[in-house]
Image (tube, rainbow, N blue to C red; front, top):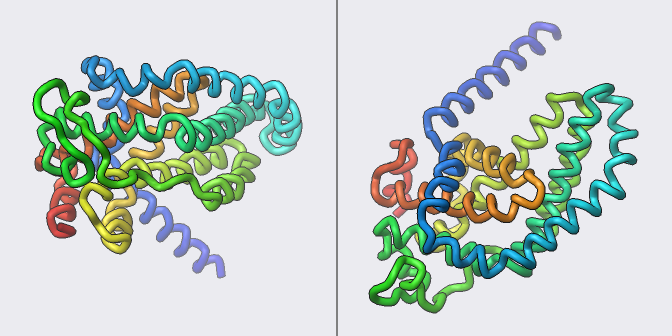
Length: 276
């Protein structure tokens, strides 16, 4: 029995080690950071954010304040039994994650969905992948990349589904495990967030659900590393709205690199061509 346990542990360790290597090799985790730099250096991309800044900041600040005032102490008391002195850190990350999830659901459903789509498409146009964008919206002549964006031909992104929120709450008990549990919680959130960031890209590629799932499955490490980096950035109170846009920029830069053959992940480029 003990030999079987050791064998299983070794296999799991090797699997995680392989996934970690694939994630590092892909360089996908760098795209959220590249998104920040690209967004700040291209003022024409600021318009979608600026038009939504006041209502989203108000929403984010209100949600974060409410969660810390009414849920921090009860959750800290519970986590203190399992995490001891680390309960302060674990609870803070937990409340930030909860606030971020609620904010993401509400803001992306009611406030910034169209703005994120415009940002994603604008980056693709700025990276000379206009042909791809034209499959999902009208493209105007002249002007900066954002000014070229015309009427949408298809309704972008999938609306929030209860399944995502249910899955989130199923992961919450992991935070009762000191340190490791919180890390696993963030990784699982990242595993979901990574593929979601390319929903618009898959739509513009006009891939079927089967093609999307196959592509995501074969490159889960890259998407998880991108998602983890994105999730960590969006945990920052209030500033999460800014990072929601820069993460979108990062996802679009990644998509543009895949289209132009400039990605740091050769296998991903090859798979995109095969899928087409």
